Length: 73
Image 1 (tube, rainbow, N blue to C red):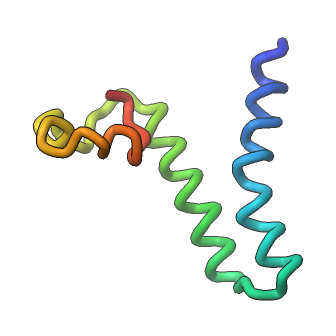
Image 2: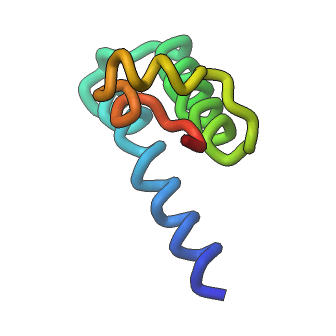
């Protein structure tokens, strides 16, 4: 019961700054906000699937990539 509520709070913490800050500072655009939300949602879905899109040898060549990208690996 606690997990879905906590997950929704964390999603709110992730999505909110990218939408609210451009709105407050009047520097954003609809395309930027939609792109941000789409990118975060795509990366979240990519991390929850069990299919590897990035081969493991890529992380062996460039180890910090595993901290930059969100993958099931």
